[in-house]
Figure 1 (cartoon, rainbow, N blue to C red):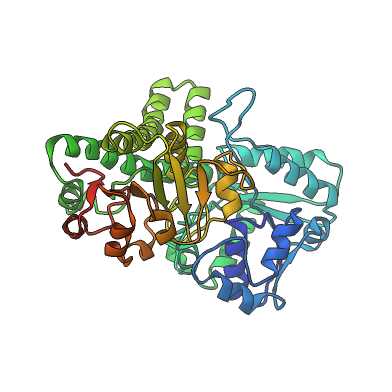
Figure 2: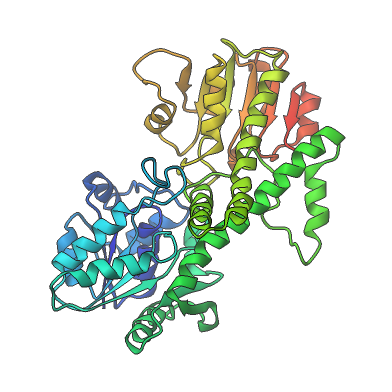
Length: 453
């Protein structure tokens, strides 16, 4: 079998690399119109950072894993085509700020229909609103071609930072398709791919609509848990309770469980907020305003948490951060990834810059260019934003250190050296609750954390 994946991003690249690793008889080609991105996949410096990914890519690349800009050739040769392109939230027109923008998905469907001369199984890998498969099918069938198409939904459930591990040993694989003879045959072909390394009891098959909605629902439930514990963190700070102790106590309840109860400055990433807003839009579209309001509150609470944390920094620094140097440690939305999309660090930095603070930002994986670009600053012009190459440089002569990503390296830093290099009083704001706060106070830091009075 020949597989083609359109889109060489955070989902397409790792997913196809693992399929190539586990299915050596399958030729896997990842195509993308971004030549620089394809060049990076063909190098030792991948555009996506994930632990273990480079090793998998280098093992299979050139054997049965290929990266190319020749989209048409990839489509023409493939038996199965995965669509794994960006589906950002619309910024214009109907549904702006909530609905998913499906222009890239539609473009892929039209390209497939124009190029295909043989039967294809088209697999939705991007996170899409319910009934997108029907739109894809309508486009494919509207072209005059002898090729026949089956459209499947196969949403990803990857956590960035553990994507390779999640692909090698997934909780489940979900495949939705038409409940016709041809649809079930197409489903089985994809089941056979995953079945080469995933146990069959973990492979779930449904109708296509259930599969599409399951992805949005899963992300909404996970984000809801984070917003719920973050709401409690505000109450903990007001009452001198400890949010980590509260989370541990309720997590011992088997009906609740301990996962996704880690309070922080807020959730980020490409999926949670986008998918919840998409769910909100769908609820409004189908005349369910109460349901829409319920899910919208999850995003509002996340925005509140970021604003509350920024406000705490300003308040603790004597109600002004104007021209004060603040060290920002971490810009990625979570550790072990270079993805900064919707990272809480962006809003915290913007808030501090609006208060005329001077920021020195350090992140081990996010590029200097990306940090300057997202904060609207020019790296060639001297200004209030500086991107530095190590955390010690960021903290030197700073009034405060602000931890915004839970990188493991931040735990083992020489904090006595950091303290000695800072202006006094030296403030430290732990937006991830990963540090030894008592030890830091013994050194001399004025420490503030999430959910602790």
